[in-house]
Amino acid sequence: MSDDLLLEVTDLHAYIGSPRGVVKAVDGVSLQLHRGEALGVVGESGSGKSVMARAIMGLMPARSDRTGTVLFRGRDLLGLSRKELHDVWGKQISMVFQDPGRSLNPVVRVERQLTEGMRRHLGLSRSEAASRALDLLKEVGVPDPERRLKAYPHELSGGMRQRVMIAVALACEPELLIADEPTTALDVTIQRQVLDLLRRVQTDRGMSLMLISHDLHVVAGRTDRTAVMYAGRLGEIGASREVFEDPRHRYTSALLGATPTIGHERHSPLNVIPGSLPSPTDPPSGCRFAPRCAAATDDCSAAQPPLVQIGTDHAVACLHPVNETQREGELVGR
Image (cartoon, rainbow, N blue to C red; front, side):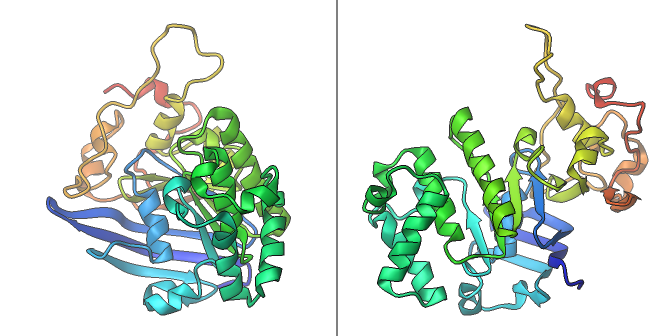
């Protein structure tokens, strides 16, 4: 593991038991994250992005199973006990969840939720932790921070709760921050503020960031590299600019083709990806996007395409990758 490589995930599987069978939420994902790097993870809802993040953190439900390796600073997190993981959470890896209203304790004041981790992991006194909590609220742009420290979460707006959640995640100076759909249920203006805040604190602190979203616009321009997931597997990964400007996987191209643009003709139909995500308990063989792909052949259903390097920092798992003269507008609509 190189000195600048912070996280290395290899052949990660995360299966969850359900009444309908075993949900193959994450099914063989491999990726790397370097120190100080921002990685975007995109895909439709249900593609396995959030479960992958929870599998990395060790926050899986009781009826679940994880295999593979998750090396963080060379240490395999999958082999750690719950007690050992408590020393990792907050201090080394922190997570900003989708819904701060559910993640923050509704009956505990903001100050205590900010200071608990600092006193445990950093050994700060009550007054030192309170002073740092105030500084954190200022850093994340919470107005009137002295008053907000004494507030309960329900007394704050959605945007303020998310800023508090980010402050909680930053409290113990983690090396990796995982932001799982951090703009869910926020209006457009607040979404942009929160996303810009995440990018700013990540850059200022030199920490690594994994930004998870179903919205391509969220990760575009705010990440160094982007990974595209579909039905529990990785379809494409590479430098963000290259992935967005020259997508090679058919699914990535279809996602971009279905995204409205400012130049879209008024009242004209939008491009759509036909069909829906396959059942996670009974996924199709081979490429899981094949049933929805107009370029699919019999070979696509025979075996899962391997992730093949096609550039210095670009890899794709597709037997019929998009080339420079093709765009999914011509191919979707099978």
